[in-house]
Image 1 (tube, rainbow, N blue to C red):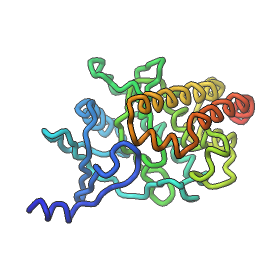
Image 2: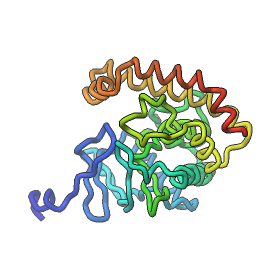
Image 3: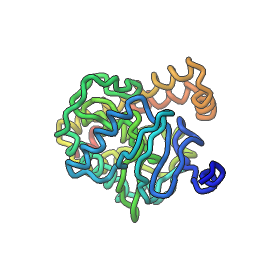
Length: 271
């Protein structure tokens, strides 16, 4: 096969901010830039499968030029503006259930302490579980309206299970003020109710439910710091996104909204 034939037979996969235009599907395989922790992530993905979690890609190959090949997970992936089918109650419940399955399988897999796991979105308190840290709609594969697969483990790092739930809630409730949600999410989503649905789908304990709103505030601060570092480094993708989404005023508004509604979130989780 010539290079021209290869280019003709590949499909560019869209979604996400970092690897835009660099992720391709070749039949049953996905070819994408490999993260610095690719070898450790590949080992973890194989171990997840051995522990009964079949909802993540299977690693196939690492190339010498810094790319990786994994199996393609067929299904539907929601891209912004997120369609109504991805924001239904059953879809949200299934996201929580899928995350719980990931954590239950991962709990029995020892962490490689010698790996320099990325700290960008990692739990500042650390932990013994390898959290996904980026369970956004673009990284969840759906079958018939239910979450059936997780992709893109580039940001995976050790942390608490609750941290991963908090990061997931930010995207799926979503845990942002209505003005920030407008344009990306269907109108009328009730964050306290949806936070409860996600917690129910995951099966959070009462103690974890009481801690979740504060952990979401902590996760939001970590995400803001991540964006600030990218902007300070001159990352044009994040500079553009920051400008298009309302600048730092938007982040201020989100953080204030979370604090102002903390009691509502807690009440919805514990009712």
